[in-house]
View 1 (cartoon, rainbow, N blue to C red):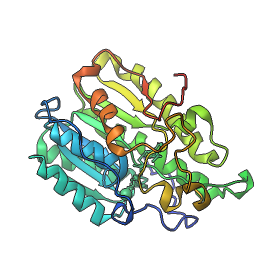
View 2 (view 1 turned 30 degrees about the vertical axis):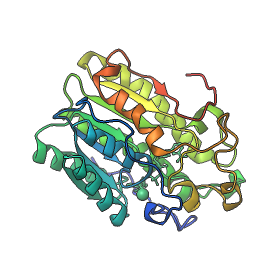
View 3 (view 1 turned 60 degrees about the vertical axis):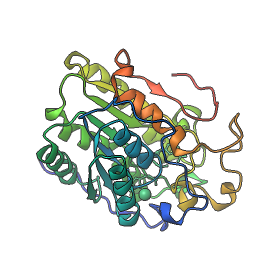
Length: 286
Ligand code: NAD
Ligand code: MG
């Protein structure tokens, strides 16, 4: 089957993907508790794990005993640091740079991970991009296609590649967003991809339930990662980033990562097709 037409990175926000090494203050990514072996001997692939939420998930999974394959677009310095942090937890890391809009890269990530460690237990689809626009007429066809390519097509490609390796007890966790639940007037294309991700999560959960593979999602609120300061939000909005949620502050990646751990391990063995909401207290349904 021929590949879908690949859409190149758009130049609207040249600072994206942002570099965590340049962020001040440094996001809090370290787990807050000792490990308890909840992912002992498991193998996980986490996309977008060089920085932000994905980095915190990678370190937490490593602390709980998993080996971790880290996919990222191009931020080598951030990715190497995350790999070091995973190794500091006594685990192992694999790094995969490149654009997940290429289906063959998704296939390579899965194939090389399974070749190295012999199994695949957890897939976390976390990579994403966003481009703020005030007017719907400002969204170019290239940006529209690119945002869907990165945020949702890549999740399909990753799941398609992973599917043959996932056995009973495996877990898939997708990253959606509070913008999907509340709407986001300045992120029309992005929030629409997040709606697609939630629908995909629910549909896939039913598709895989009889095989004992669980599929859930996490819908973060405003989290302190490179995504928004590097161009994902307009600069004038960054000054008050996170202030409008009930807790009145942005969340840190290590306040979000435990939701992924819960959904990855047997603690959530009676949950599939669901979404968790680490969002500072915004009440949303579903
Ligand atoms: P981040 O910039 O640290 O992580 C996103 C990562 O995705 C980047 O590091 C980049 O390497 C990767 N990526 C982007 N495009 C890619 C591509 N085409 N191919 C391969 N990798 C690509 O930011 P983050 O906030 O940790 O974002 C992680 C996820 O959380 C995203 O899906 C984002 O939409 C979601 N999210 C973030 C927030 C927030 O406020 N930070 C809120 C809700 C949802
Ligand atoms: Mg990054």
